[in-house]
Every structure is written in structure tokens, then in C-alpha cells.
Length: 386
Image (cartoon, rainbow, N blue to C red):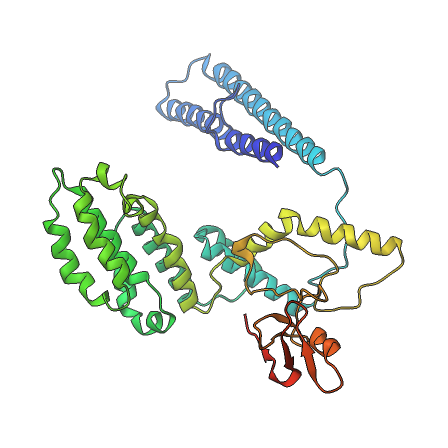
């Protein structure tokens, strides 16, 4: 995908005017033309028009028109190069499917998903335009919550933990049952920032902060608390970066607060930790759609159909961040466990699916483990929950 992405970046830079082309941007040419028109109007009103005024104006209009035409030609050429890069990358035509959002309810659900995506990713002006044009109903309260989310995220990006801490304190009753480390990590970030900001090293402000803000977190985070105190012996920062506590001097200690806060904030709204449309794009564009379409084509050629409604006919490899539940494949049948065929643990500790357990059971209900000499009764097998 490097080719199409590079061409798209060039096209965006060309249209935004962030790179110098052969001609000025369309906005620049239009602004210059308007300025010329305003100047001529002022001269007409002042009565200082000469014989060459309108001739020069006509020449200016023609020049600016040529600049705009040439700039548009550059943009069209960039669009053509982007299209060729896409054609080169995707050699097969896109498959066609029946409309998936034909009903009004489905269309409204799709519009709401898109609007929430814009709000959640901080594209507020785009979201407002989309909401106005689509007519989707997003409450002002929910919009305000997303505004607050991005206000706090922006503050964290500037290494200001105050707004995030205030939110964490107000929502302790939500965070504590989840065993969320958010508030502790915010204080830890501030502690390390105080510890490493002084030159020469002066740990007194950091220790005072820890005594005031971190002491209450010791029971839940005793190990990390001891690490924060022990790292003092490895100051200054250059020495700490070569110590067993080097991770405490890493910028990721502070940068990781942003996704953690966004995860907890969205959880408080009953939303997933990941942006749904982004997950769809990552999985579908990462090869899932291509694999499914290939399987669909093969099955169509063989005149066969997939009868399972809750499973795909092929395995789709997923990155770790997109695996939302554990998967168990029976070592005997090689089949993936389901609610109807759950994993069962024998008394010896080995796990097989219920279907395999029933097949291995003798008439008297005894089962010999397929991986060790242990025999047990079918009724003693326990269901395993991953």
C-alpha cells in the first residue's frame, strides 16, 4: 500500500498548498485577483482611472485564470497518478454485493456510527456538518462529552495532567471496580516528571509529591510504588536510563496515558476501547475482505454453500489488539470450541472439547486421556472458561 499512500499524500499536499508546485495555489490566485478588483474599484470611486487601468485589469484576469487552469491540471494529474497506483495495487475488480443498508433503520444506524466516529476522533466541524446533512440525532450532552474527552487528551499531550486527574477523581466509583490504574499512572507520570526535571538532581519536590499524592495507592500498587522509590538511587537521568528502572525514564510512560484515558473515558460512556470504524478498516483492509472474497469465489465455483451462520468458512488472522476473546482449538478434533461444544478439563489437567470427550468415553463413562495414561470419569470433567 506504500505506492497509493505516497501518491495520496502528494495529492493532499498539492491541494492544501503545503508544497510548492509550478503554479500558486487556487486560493492564492483568487485572493490576488480579488485584490486587483478591489483596487480598481477604489480608483473608480476616487476618479483616478486612466486609460491603461482596464487594459491592465484584463491582463491580470487572464493571468490569474491561466494560473488556476494550470493548477487544476496539476491536481488532475495527481489524481490520475493516484488512480493508477490503486489499479496497480488492486489488480482485481472490487466484488459487488447486495445493498447492506437498504432499510431505514439500517441507514440510520450507519449514519449514527459515522457521526460518532467523527466526534470520537475529534473531527468536530466535519461531525456537525454530517449531523446537519444526514439528520441523525446525536444529543448535545453526548457531543459535549466528546468535546471534554478531546480537551483532556490535548492537555495530556501538553503534559498537563490536571484535567485528567480531576476527571479520574470524579469517576473513582466507576474506575475502582474495574481495577483501573489510570489515576495512579497519572500521579506516577507527574512524580517522574518532577524527579527528572531538576538539574542538578533534587528529589525533594518529587518525594513531597509522592507523599501527598501516591501514598494512598500503596496497597494496590505496592511493587510499582517500591520501584518509584528505589529509582532515586540511580539519578541523574543519564544513569537511570542505563539502570533496571530505565522504563521509568522512557517517554512512553507519559505518552501511554493518552490511549489509557481514552479507553476509560469511552468505557464510562458504554463504548468500546477501540474506534469501531477504524477496527473495520484495519481488519477488512488488512486482508480479511480479500480472503473472504476468495473463499466465496472458490465455493461458488464448486457450487457449495457455507451453512454455518455464526462462523466464517476460513480462518482470518487478527493482530493481538483485535482479539477480543480467547480461542481454544481441540487438540483431538482440531475444531474450535463453541458454546455448544465447550472446552472440558479432565482430572489430569488436559483440555479437550466436549464433543471429543463424548467420543472418547467408554460404555461405563470412563475416559482415557489422549495425552497421558490417566483415566477419569466423564462426569468429573469440568468446563473451562477462557
